[in-house]
Length: 380
Ligand code: KG4
Ligand code: ZN
Image (cartoon, rainbow, N blue to C red):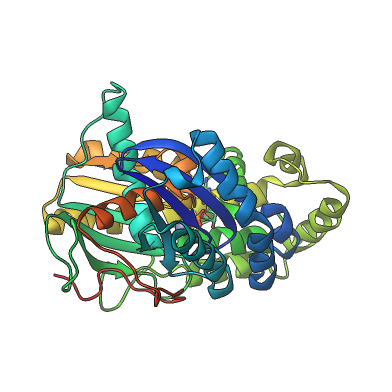
């Protein structure tokens, strides 16, 4: 089955063709980073307009790279939510029109389910191409950690979810109560005038800083210990900057950045004092320590030995190192997608949609975008 995946929930317009739920024939992602960079975050209205410009060429390119005509596609899988409503609608309406015009089935996919399937898809690809990887075994614990989400799920196969036929079921174990981890990276980068998105630049600059330089303390959670909260940490960084020489330094960087076009982390580094680099490294260490500790506590409580980590923040090098080290010590296996499948893409939507289509899940004309679309909140 050839599934055309379409993703437009935030600031990437993406289309992909995946065969049999496990072979990526093409995956095209048009990033809007340059549009949003000067605002230090995604501007929803601009995002919708960019999607409108990109959706047709991106889908055409995905078909062309796969060597297919539109009529060759067997089904369409499109992100239904959660996300920015105007952005979601562009991909969704295009997908519905495509399916209607060509009389193809269409299925709506939860963006978070897509991120979870990115790991399973990559795991399958690695094994199919003779890459000696550990198989991700279900039930597993999944951490989806991105600019919009920080959630822990238990993922199981072969169970029907709340009346809908499904080959997978998800139980939400914990989620952020305020900022997502990637959002905290982006906001700290904005505060320090490091650019957008913040995660990749902080990841690189933190290597030149001392992660024990600033003491942030552990993030304490009342109630569910598997919930997350990163806004306090972001505010703690603000207090370390406000009224100190670091604030003036950030202003100088902001002025310099206006003259530099899309500077790389290596170009930004000479404009950062050691105190700024230490602050960045300590902030990153605090986020990563919290993510790793809560995730592995959940895995231990569930008695699962496979941990799936996906979403944009899964690209973070310290996160991967820390997970690998802690998992080795405690006997877990941690699986991540490659960076291209960690951030938003449509191959993960096609892969997740494939399993829905396989059991006869079909959307009708009432399929619409959902800004809020919880996954696994009611499942067991
Ligand atoms: O999954 P994604 O592309 O979009 C959402 O669904 O949000 O994730 C984007 C987020 C941004 O917040 C970005 O700063 C973060 O992922 N990110 C990183 C890294 N690469 C991307 N965060 C930390 N370290 C990275 N290397
Ligand atoms: Zn995402």
